[in-house]
Length: 102
Image (cartoon, rainbow, N blue to C red; front, side, top):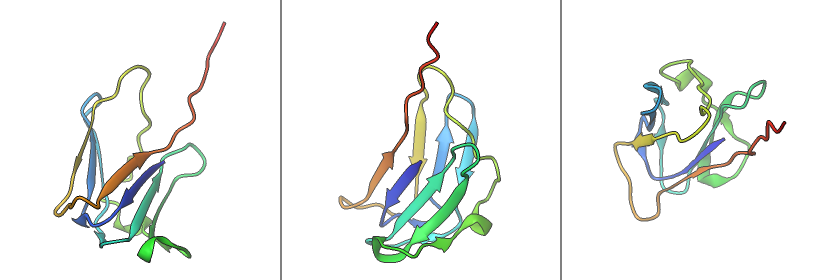
């Protein structure tokens, strides 16, 4: 899950430089807002939490591309772009490592 804490302005975008896939959310993320993008299989959602608290607003219709891509095995190079950012802006990637042991 990706968590953007604003400000990010309009249309924050994730680009996976490893695969070339992009994900753009055409929504405005203001100071203190939180945008959550959950790409986990079976739980895919995009939600804006005004002021950082719930209840969240379903922002799925604002997704520019329905490609909710997973990270690939090994290193992924991710680029984030946004119209606005400040020292209080932050991005978190929250994930559970999976072990495919033998």
